[in-house]
Amino acid sequence: MSCILHLDSSSRGSRSISRALTKEFVARWLQIHPGDRVTYRDVGQYPVPPVDEAWIAASFSKSEDLAPELASALSVSDELIDELLIADRYVFGIPMYNFSISANFKAYIDQIVRVNRTFTSDWQGLVKNKKMLIITTRGGSYSDASSNQLDFQEPYLRTVFEFIGITDITFIHAENLTMGDESRQQSLREAHIAIQNLVAIW
Ligand SMILES: Cc1cc2nc3c(=O)[nH]c(=O)nc-3n(C[C@H](O)[C@H](O)[C@H](O)COP(=O)(O)O)c2cc1C
Image (tube, rainbow, N blue to C red):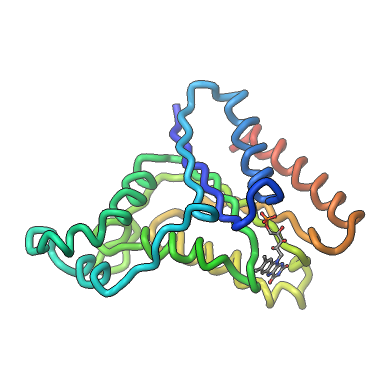
């Protein structure tokens, strides 16, 4: 039995395509694995705070030396990291914003990438034996050699998640979503097929 962390990061609600695709994947997954547990986190519509000076001071202090006001600076981070560590599979919906990720999702990353919790002081990842699916949505396309250079989303996400120990990462990219109805429909058909295929083997 797996514990899945299902996370969305679009700032849009019902119009969000990444939300629809992660929801589809999780629903199909549960049809095959009805006993699995799903925790849901929405950092798009319920953003987590950016890290601040107290957070930084607290995260680099020994826990036994922490004054109460500094310990409370890490409470959101603790909750998010506990949630991450308990899960063994991740299904994340991450739209491309300005060639990379949204500020809301970056705030989430800053909260979970923390020394002695998700990586060691000599840069070993502590989030081990996990599987991650990232479904991205993009207005344009970044799959050919020239446009690929503008993709600061997948390389960044691979780097930061591998840094904390998550190395088994699958991407499904839904592209060309703002390039006209025909391109969007074609891209969505491909995304649905990719989801169906992955559910069977993930
Ligand atoms: C603030 C913002 C920035 C965006 N930047 C890009 C971009 O750099 N490249 C791109 O291909 N699409 C970009 N888009 C388009 C989105 O990736 C696309 O609309 C996607 O469907 C959004 O995900 P969602 O449907 O889950 O909300 C941007 C959209 C927004 C709102």
